[in-house]
Length: 146
Image 1 (cartoon, rainbow, N blue to C red):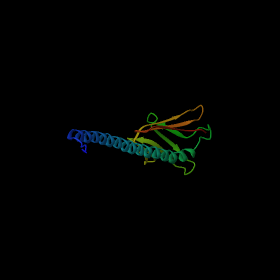
Image 2: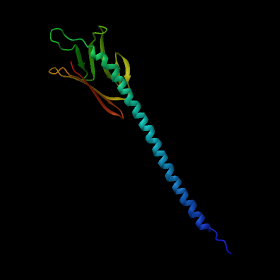
Image 3: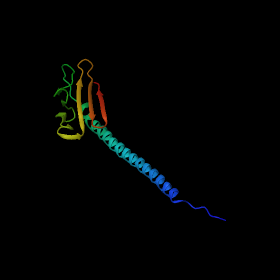
Image 4: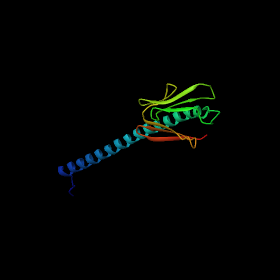
């Protein structure tokens, strides 16, 4: 009885096929790991943005109002990139502004990687809208009503 053996060509073909499959699997794992890292970084920026807005909003909620007109004592400057307002909580004047790529409240950095910051106030409705755009994440808007 004669035993069948693999030829050299068959062995080389199997090795080549295994090599191609291994290379494809490695690329898939690399892309998955890259996607995970990108998602983790974006989540970190989203959480930082939410934390920054949660820090700024209480200060804005204690904004002082003009007793004669009932309008808030606030000044929007820099084409809408800065807001100055008085506070009932501590009787101080606070400034929320974009400086370079940072969002600052009274000079303290709340958030970095900010590409755009816009403050809009409507005299008719009293609505104050703050829109913050963060690099690689997108825009976040918050509105306060009287």
